[in-house]
Amino acid sequence: MLETLWEALDRLPDSWVVVAGDGPEASSVAAVATRHPRVRYLGYVQDLAPWYRAVDIVYYALSSRTRNSRLGFPNNVAAAAVANVPLLVADVGECARLVRRHRLGYVMPEATVENVVRGMADLRRPEIYAGYVSAARAASGRFTWEQSAQALVEAYQRLLGRQLS
Image 1 (cartoon, rainbow, N blue to C red):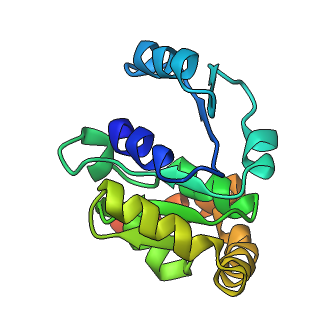
Image 2 (cartoon, helix red, strand yellow; image 1 turned 180 degrees about the vertical axis):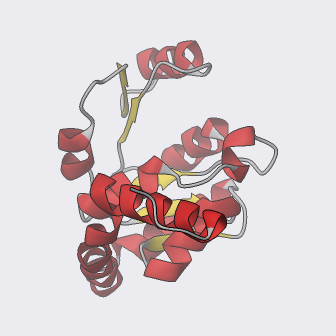
């Protein structure tokens, strides 16, 4: 999905992309960063919170064919919400559901170059951006570790039909 972002970046001359992580795409991202003046590759970062606060939009577009797209709660959604940063996501799995439910950003029907450019244009409109930031601020309290732990305990209690001590 990053190839789509690189192509879209060529059509968004006033945008920069910052990528963190050391997963399977690391060498590919590092190579792009050496060739593209508006791509910065950070590698592994222990504490991403300052980076989330430093960006204007978080792009998170998984393919429906990847295992991560079907797993539970996407941490990137929580981190963006806590930082009050709107998301640009593909319409895949739990990530898209959460972004829609809490109005945290733009959900693309699929991650194509045209949809990324359209989503970025939409998110950059001040009145729309402000609405997403406000929604993220309102939802951020739902995305704490404490809240997640409490929800997990409650789910286990419902499954077991009794209180956990």
